[in-house]
Image 1 (tube, rainbow, N blue to C red):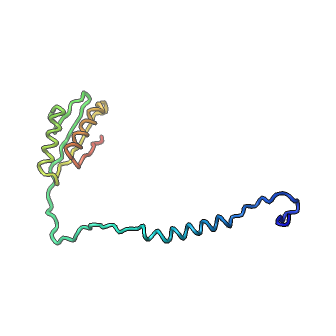
Image 2: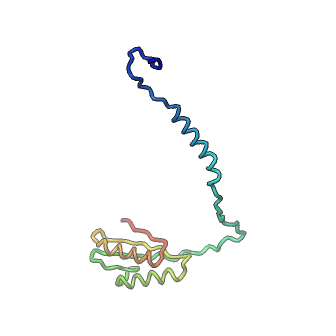
Image 3: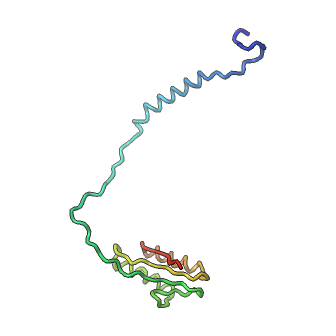
Length: 136
């Protein structure tokens, strides 16, 4: 074999990568040409500068919600049924949706997680934004 450089006379084990490089260069040129065509502008509405800042409002006092080991729910240390708590949350949000009170949830270690999940679901449905957990 005249193309073989090894002296053993066996088959040549080198891979010819020239065609692969040619194909990759052609693909690179195609992507470089088509990339600017595929881009499109995105309109972004940025906030405008205001000369009058919004008035500072005092946040309302927080709502303390406690769940004891028996599953009873207390709203500011007064016991209420769970459905009443949902309505009370909705009323608190409707007073001033932009200045909501913080809901501080305190649970007993032995409390049923299902009651807490229902309370959180009611808070989400009432669109309460400020929810915190009390740690002991």
